[in-house]
Image 1 (cartoon, rainbow, N blue to C red):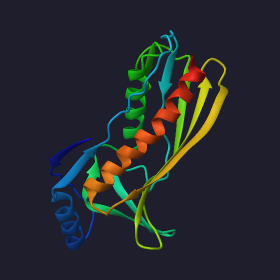
Image 2 (image 1 turned 60 degrees about the vertical axis):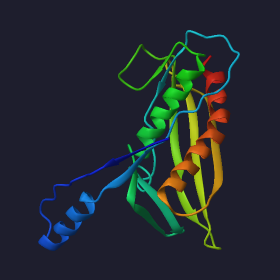
Image 3 (image 1 turned 45 degrees about the vertical axis):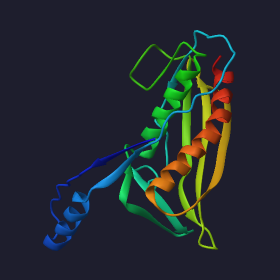
Image 4 (image 1 turned 180 degrees about the vertical axis):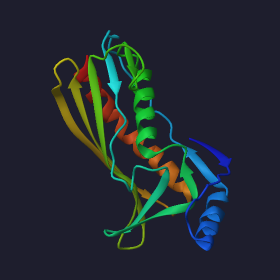
Length: 202
């Protein structure tokens, strides 16, 4: 996981002066930017010639942005004001999946749409949870939940669908603590999810 400092500006059109100024001031504040890393999995399987297309995951609007989500109760969400992900959550997870699958060395090619050969299989991902939840005792947990579906490209036959979910405690609501908790969550989930995907592509 890497951390960089960046400054962002936002052009706001058509807003009342005081509102626009407030948005500009918020956007201009330095934010810590976090990047989650791919996960390597050990494999003894021989490399196949199969190719896999990993589509950008789908997610609810509250998740499909580059902000760190904090859910305080079932009806309200907020975001950390001084930190963000380096990309939107769906694009970040897509990159992590591609890099992690590629590092296994088990298939001929894995990539995103518009790159590489015609795929033998397609990986669809639906993100259902990717945020921090505040519990009744005011403690925090990081919850990650996504559903993977593998399709055979030539006839769109579903080769399998599986959900992967984990919840990890978070010591506090600081950005660095939260980011490291999500890295641990991926390190727990991907060693389960990737062999499942590869077994259906090979």
